[in-house]
Amino acid sequence: MPATTADLEAVVRDAVLQALAARGFDVDGTGAGAGDGHGRPAGPRPVALLEADAPPHVHGRQSGSEYCTHCGGCMEPAVYEAGSRTTPSSTADMVDRLDRFTELVWRAEPQDITRLRQLTRPPMGRMPGVFYANFNLFWLGENLQTLRDKARVGTVPVEHLNEMLAAACLRSAIRLSKWKLLDVIFLLSDVVGFAQRTGCASHDEVRELIEHLLLAVDRVQAWVDRMIPWHRLDAVLEPIP
Amino acid sequence: MSRAFEVIVGNDRVVCDLLDDVAPRVATRMADALPVDSFAVHAKFAGDELIVMVPFFENPQNEIFWVKPGDIGYYPGRQTICMFYGPTEPFGQVSVFARAREEHLPLLRRWGQQILSAGSLPVTIRMFDPDAPTTAEGALS
Image (cartoon, rainbow over all chains, first blue to last red; front, side, top):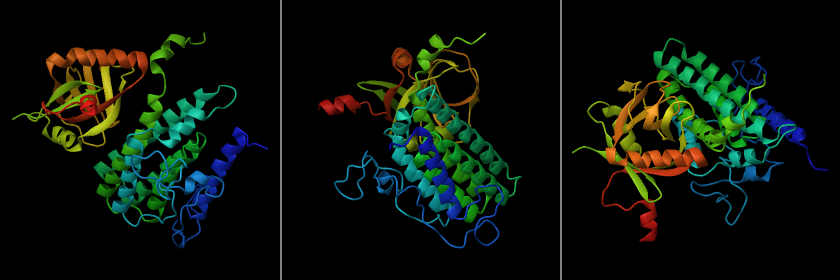
């Protein structure tokens, strides 16, 4: 029996939460992850979201290719960093991962956006997913800008900025799971893991990481924004009295 | 010698002179980021303005509210460059770091009208070389 949209949403949301929880992340706001009592898990665990149910997620990609170039001859749609890996050990490693993501989504429409084009939900079809994805990503960017400003000023302790960064990214990842932006969710879960487990060591590192994260998520937001027919909307927008 | 970059759509190009005297940091950051393939969209509530995301983050410099047609600004809030080609209703300050050449303003206006009727345009931005073919010209040669 084919899965319904509601089923898929539940699968994605549960998978995100379970995978994050399995990695020791605080997904319920209590900070009660398995680990050393400080929100740090006992040891590194690989990212393993959905690989059993979603074959495309085991396939890799190189810049410039729409398809997996990892296993040779494979024509599965490629996705961001599908292989198992551990949490970045430093801000430089995390920034490098963010830059690779940005490179992947810069030139060609990301797979997340292709999926979003196909997403339809009752009773209003494609509109809610596209618009909400656009503004969910937009406000993730705005919130990250706020954190960056705080990091620049340096008045908030670094450990608090790490915690706020993790919380903002986790909330956005869960929210974006409604619109099936799986590659963005992977990326945000990486940032959550880094911020909770390793964390930036200085205000300057927080600022740097956020600037690179902004480029990554704002690029995806730009792709969503690009497909909205803004130039035709005003003509059909008749506010309800 | 002054530096310039060019914005290319198909076989057409708009040359923009970098304002190294008033915005050297942003101008240099832009030059260092080129070449870039991206796409242009139209402003939604600020008048005659084209917007292109660029892959760098830079702090404000030479911020101006009342921009003029031809001004090229950088907006760190979205990591975009804003190309003003006609009347604007400014919504905020941008770091004006370049200026489109006067003779190319009609082309910017044409692109603006194209985007308003179609949605977006693919663009290539690179340092200006008067002898280099545009993307389309290069494909034909």
